[in-house]
Structure formats: C-alpha cells, structure tokens
Length: 118
Length: 108
Picture 1 (cartoon, chains in turn cyan, red):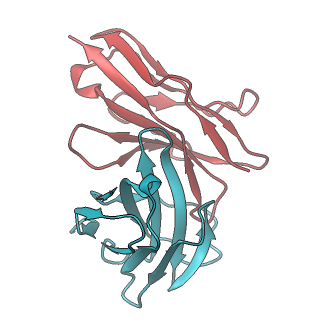
Picture 2 (cartoon, one colour):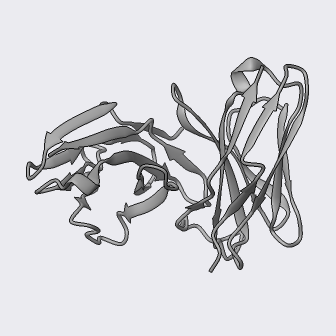
Picture 3 (cartoon, chains in turn yellow, blue):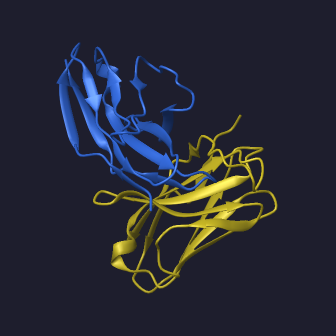
C-alpha cells in the first residue's frame, strides 16, 4: 500500500510570508500528526488531527495551524514566517480507530517538507 | 508533562560489540514507549514498542518503571545498524513525545 506522501518536498520563503504544506496519509489511516524537526530540538509535536478535528496540540504559537479534510488528507499552515521556522516538517499517519481509542498506534512517517525561511 | 531524554548524541561502537542506547522518561501515568529508527536517506520508522515485547533486528528494550528507563540493546552490533535512533513516549490518544535522538555509528 502506498506510504505517506508530503508536498512539496522543498520550499523557500522569506520572513513574513505564509506557507501551506500538504500530507496524504496511508489509505485507511484516520489520524495525522505533524512534527517539526530541527538539529537542535529534534522532533517536536505540533498537532494531531482525527476525524477533521484537532485532537492534540503541542507548544507552538498560533501562527502554526492545520486542518484535515474528509478524506483524511491534512494541511499545515504557518503564517508570518520567522527565520526560526526553518526546519523539516514531518507528518505521520496512524490508524486510530476512534476517539476513545487510548492505545497509540504505530506512526508511519512521510519524507518531510524542507522549509527554508530567508 | 511528558519528557524523553536521550543523553548521548553520538554513540560509536565497533562491529560485534554490544550496543546500549539510553532513554529515560518522565511521565506521571502509565506510558507507552517506542523506539523509532531513521536509516540514511530513509523515512523515520518504528523499530519496536514495549507493549509488543518483540525483538526486531536483534534489538530489545525493557521498560523499567522504577528507573523510568527504556534502553535499547543489541548484543552484537552490525554495520547496517548505523542510523539515528529516537526514543518516544505516549500517554495515549496519539500524542507522542520524541527524544532528541542518538546517532549510532558502527565502526567496521
């Protein structure tokens, strides 16, 4: 089955601009999580979407937002870009059968979108 | 709050030597612990999780609640084990906290 795909793979933006990244999960997966990966901080959790609603949120400012569509595809938006937003943005999909599903399923990662802010 | 600490950024071992990648966590409840691995030019992928109690590619990890640790071990390192290893913790409901990772370098 096809893996998680992310588009675009590379982006170069300037400070103050906004950017939208896209993630298509594995077919049948209903949960999509987003992470920011930097050399200094490692992988940091941004948010998780399930059934078109944000269910979990990390400690990032409101400039970072996302959404999920009915087909489980997800987008992440960063507004008013800052130099420090330069990073690899990873999305991961997992099964997550329902809201009451406590067990955290295996996450399947995409290749990432490399964002450079100049 | 969930926290994962991987104290070593880089671990170099010779081929055939034992490997132990350290992971300590902080969490007040009953955590789910994972090890993820990223080989060169590949995606991050699950190596093992504590509830499965599996041995994958010769690696094992035991959850020690007393010491709040989940160290990854392998008795004999192989060159193909060279990769970036991340320990991760979840309190459930798909919220996962990753450590900063340890680069394992196996010297031939």
